[in-house]
Length: 139
Ligand SMILES: [Zn+2]
Image (cartoon, protein in one colour):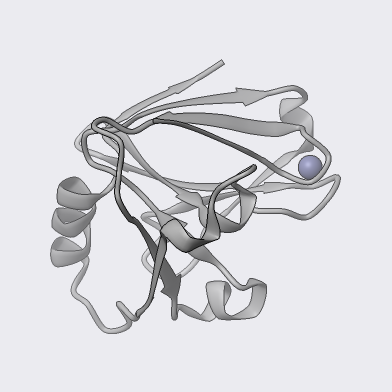
């Protein structure tokens, strides 16, 4: 399955290859202080391949807070946050926003709350290595 998403104005676009075709797509409503404020809901497949296309990099703001191990990629033109990356041991891992997906069958979304508040940083990074998309390219 090839899933496509983008911010509202199209400056940040992505395509995610998800093999085999998923019966359900996990949709984690993140309970961190930032995602609570902007309504962040994320998905990832550790075996997926993500390609991110940025039209104008000067209109992408990277926001980080707390443990400063995750970069939220915010389109500074339209305010949408299509993806988050985390660089661990020199490798870039990512999750993408379920809300930024285009033409996805909403019935496929398996929505659940996720709260990682208080998780130790080492545990946090290990979890991302297990669950986040490990094949990420930017162009
Ligand atoms: Zn935008």
